[in-house]
Length: 307
Image (cartoon, rainbow, N blue to C red; front, side):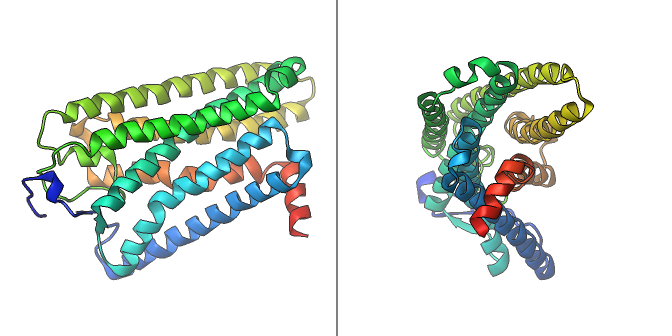
């Protein structure tokens, strides 16, 4: 690890390798390649089905299309570079590449957090306020909500990326993570001004926590309404749909908050690596299976599209 006195002289960062042996590096490459291609296929099919089938031009599927677009960008920000490094047996990422990766990662993370909250609100209105659903979530309201989700991601990315890369770095150029992550960049800072970014991270984590609480309260109201469904089959169908949604959302938001707020005393490269995989790789690959492929209307649209 090279000791650098001035952050502006850093031309590249060294990412954490998944393995030291060539065999394990290739195993990591093929494993991530399989997950990545599956995520691209599933999210791409969801986007195509919703866009091409007019029967799916409803608020729920409109938000689902936006979620798939965010997931495509989200997993493409970190996984391909990690695969390339394992394949070519290198750890390097350029300074500009690291800055772009952090910006895009924060953009898609902020957008996804906001959109998942909006989708929980959509399901709450559909199940608990069905008579007002059409008036509260018209086409204009849906466009405004989706734009707000993408806009919040852009604001989150610009705020954090600009602040992080204005810090002087003098603690080397090695990052204990398989992609560029703000907490790892802050470890390289040699100025007390990094506390400003720590405060911003705490604010963003608090925003994620508020989103999580809102989602949780929405699902509590949904479950209360589901319990009033007279048929056992109807209750089972509703629970089998809502519980996986809540599980994936909980995994995504809780691991992000943990990664940004955990005390340094419990931080370790192996723990950070596992947590990062849980919120960067698992949700984009699992979301299509949870939200899309178990949906009968979407499966029919996919069959129609393929045929």
